[in-house]
Length: 101
Image (tube, rainbow, N blue to C red; front, side, top):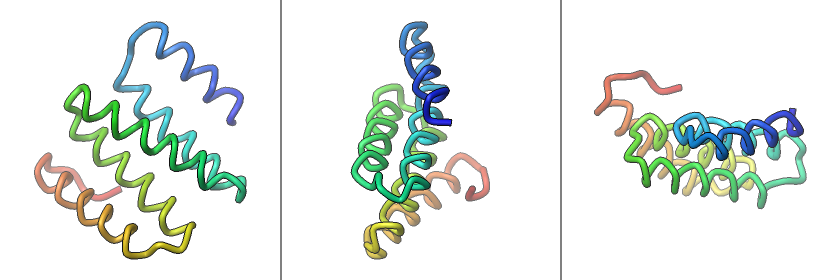
């Protein structure tokens, strides 16, 4: 999965589709968590995702980035940070009228 997501990341960057790039970075974060050795890489992709969502003012992208942080901080054992990001995600979903995913 990682190989194909990295290729998608390259392609989306090249064509400038930043909304889908946010999703791809979130998926890459999850892949690194699944590898059980990639907390730092998972965090890096969550950071990229949030930075991009902020840059293009994407509320759904922000919510998805916070979901990546929730998973990453939970895996790292930092439940306080995980809860903070959960609350941010819930707040965003409430504003945009979607359920928490």
